[in-house]
Length: 67
Image (cartoon, rainbow, N blue to C red; front, side, top):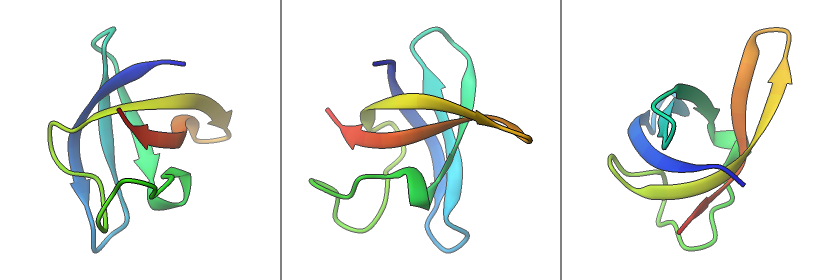
């Protein structure tokens, strides 16, 4: 399971980006976040683990969890 840190997340819009440990940025939507351990949203620089899924728009982080 890849890991990284939250680059930014806009709580109102419900999306943001995670910087993977590999250096690549990956899109994250609020629907892909598991809120166990989160107050209401992802926080900048928060360490997370996640799975990578791909759809017609490209790669995105899913099953995002705080570590």
